[in-house]
Amino acid sequence: MGKGGPKTAVSTSDIPTRYQDFVDSNLGLASVLANRPYHRFEGPTLAGFTPDQIAAFNQVRGMDAQRMPQQQAANAATAAAINSITNPATMMGKYQNAFTEDVIDNLTTDLRRERDAMNATARLQSPFGGSRAALVEAENNRNYLDRLANATGQLRMQNFQDAARLGQSGTGQLMQGASQLTNQAAANQRMGLEAAGALSGIGQQIQGLQQAAMADREKRFLDELNYPLQALNLRQQAVGMTPMGSVSRTPITGNRGSIGGLLSGLGSLASGLGGMGLRF
Image 1 (spheres, one colour):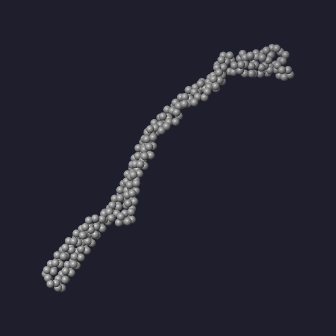
Image 2 (tube, one colour; image 1 turned 30 degrees about the horizontal axis):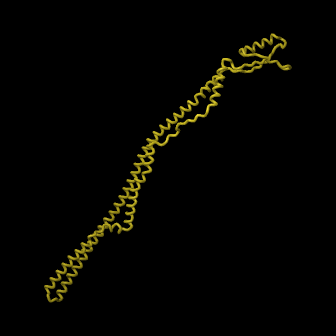
Image 3 (cartoon, one colour; image 1 turned 60 degrees about the vertical axis):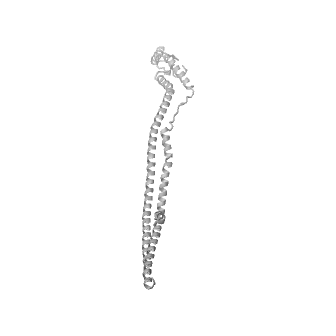
């Protein structure tokens, strides 16, 4: 005890003997774990694309090769239809009857032959000529020209009307065909995308299972790696709940010169510390 101040009783305690080995083993285990080298997870962690997904990608990439021919044909048909509307002769020329002129030539020959026969007959009736014969021949020539003009005019008009009607019908068919080709190209693309989407969906499900399997393997690896740490933590928690060493100072009260009072105070202190070592 120091001189000149209040007198105190000082007691200290160490780790209880029955816990000493357990605490020492914890320290040893912690040292081993701290010195353990870094362990890297060597397995794959990212699932790649599945064959179904790759097939879907290739199908989408190949759609232009399937769609473009139809779309180009539709564009060409539309352009031809527009040109035929802008310049009707373009389409009408395709439907002109190539035999009309032959028919007109044959008709002209037949009418001329008929006129010549009629004129010959008139000359026979008036072998010496005269005004009557001239009048008959003139009338035959006029009739020939009138009939020829009417017949050729009707033939050419009919040919023009047929060509115009067929040309307009051809323009409509071009527009209709272009629309059908465009719709078919769009339908093919839509069906292709739906099929590619179905393949991609199947691939995503397979990829998800593969990713889940990889994550499970990584989790098992980490669980195994961290198991000693978890065990050490549990042991440390157990140590934390046990009484450890301490230092206690208790003032000594009562008669300073009384040995009985001092012994009484020390007895109480020893009883409170549970049998721990005592020194002054």
